[in-house]
Image (cartoon, rainbow, N blue to C red; front, side, top):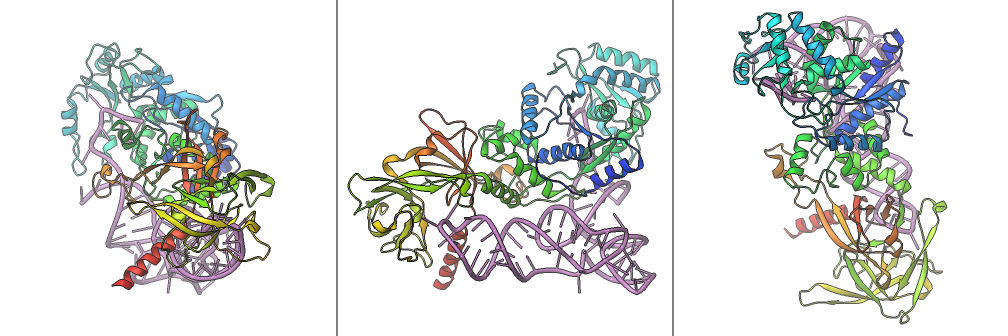
Length: 564
RNA sequence: AACCUGGUGGUGUAAUUGGUAACACAACUGGUUUUGGUCCAGUCAUUUCAGGUUCAAGUCCUGGCCGGGUUGCCA
């Protein structure tokens, strides 16, 4: 972690004050994922906050799995979450915990509440409970079981634990206030029966505590000072405090809420991301189009870029939507610094040099990073038959088109100046080959007469090219706010993945795993794990800015308007 | 309609706690360039509205307007 973070958001302000007033000598936070899915960018915001403030203030951050619902949680999610947090750059040291570590204590505390007359075993059906809860305008109605003797509830609760009852037959409720304007306080359920084995406790339990009954108490057990969560738990804070107040817990943690992250063209709902995976809309949780940390990792994001992004968007209590271009910009910025430059032709078109000596191959020297000569150079073969991008040749070119067109001279980067002399088409009118002549005096990409050649394009020698499958990704959704006008699935971008057969310069054949490169004039890429002995596969992490595309669009618009 | 909460450019954050509204992204202009990349320069808000306090208000007070959350045996 090299980014310095001198933010002064409300969380850091509170912590500073608590430290200054002596309320706390040191701070302890926690990141509490439920292992029912994979972590995504939204979680990255929370992770950077939880671990970030702990580090900044010399405190500690625990990783605690909120595993209170065995019907949704699985061990492989636990493993993936740990890997993702580590990859993002954070370390919980010895402090790995699970809410399930506290099941026995939680059970004891539930009994305590019953004994104190603050909880009771409910026997109404879920439906009746819902009916009697009232609504936002009307108070609820007390349960007929609300005032049963503590002894009776205690006995029933013990038999719930012993497995005497079916799922849903009975439930333990806190006795608070059925008329509270805060629905969360209308005698909330705190223990339910679930005959299901748990990833960690196996079949030891058939009753499980609800989130509300587990979270604050877990915080207290671990000595958490600042329990940071998202705004949807704001209404739960009074309940969080109620348990802490009425139970003999060892500490008094406080909950603070911040707004979750919304990103344009992105879905940050674990439930909906799971749906995409389950329905096969994407390949997997780590599909490079997914906003999951594993997907972003596979896509080629650097942890540093994600951390920088999280620091930039800050922490607030107001809901907002961050423009995805901010993330992309920070990513490019990070990659621009470190990525070595390479040449790769994504949509190949053959160029034949008519005056090139038959069979001749020449090595040319190319810089690994134009801005950083210290990163060295490499040699690339240049020959009489080359691949260039189809988009770098136009039979009829618009104004300001600096690339190859009949009669125009163009620089082949690090190679020679070539002038287009002609081209061939097939029966469908598609260009099949471009013919050029080269200037032998222009080796390396310049001439002694210093004449101006505006256009520079990249290329790969046909005889030496490495074939590769390259996956070009676009936003997973085509709408800025997926689902804003109905079903979010309708907003999926049908063109979020384009696969092309590309031609790569030779050294890309055995690029070290995990290395990130820039394909010049195109974007940043990394090798995908699908690569094998006979196939090299690359993922496009993010495209370069393309001001020509913008210009051309504008020119086209002007032309269209002029035609009217 | 009840309760809780919030409101600074197109977007996300700042503003020495009452003292020149700053930074980044996006957009638009230019310049440099062997990547139409990078880099550099410039343009783009009288802080939701109306009052009030004050020499001075984004910041304090009153009222309005608008937004988000809440009626799982999910977290």
